[in-house]
Image (cartoon, rainbow, N blue to C red; front, side):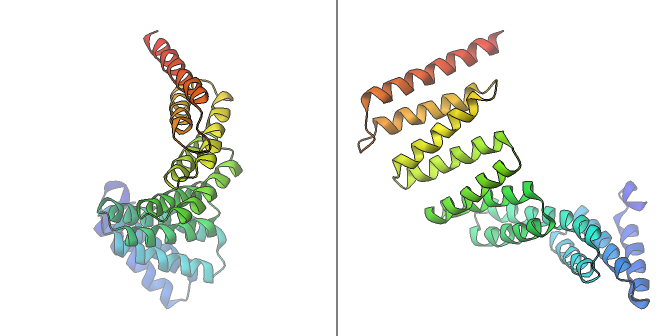
Length: 242
């Protein structure tokens, strides 16, 4: 009740009282829910690490008591806090610490069978590895991101995953695979209306890749894709002007 009025100090007091009583009577569900309540209160006042510790304990209690639904609810909260911490480290360019918390987040998301959060974690981990120049590991995690997007039938995220993989392969000088993923972007966009912008971007990158010296070099294909790029741009401008 007190959470509704943003009175987290009073709410924490009552959660602590519930915890004390639950411990005294060895009531595992009460302990799990009390730790969850304490964790959420700490999160609301931006104490991320005390929030994390309480939620970790809550999840551990729920799982030890085989409280499947309670554990799933707590996992959702724990994932959210791990993401907050991971993103904070990411903003500070503390990549090793950010990676550590995204991996924790991934582990909890897998236990909770939350495919959307799991996919998001793979995406973020892949981005960190790419930033650190570990392109093979970046590809590995972005492939996992793509597979989960296919599993959840999220076409928009599939397009994003193919774009990211094309970017990583391009950095690794694997032009063939970069082209393949950009072609996948175009194919997916053809199945969806109102997708001019990603199509234009993919066509531009395909044109540049075919213009690049190497086994895939083709002035003709480069010109065709660049022409397609400008066609999509003009089409988008016409729609926006209506």
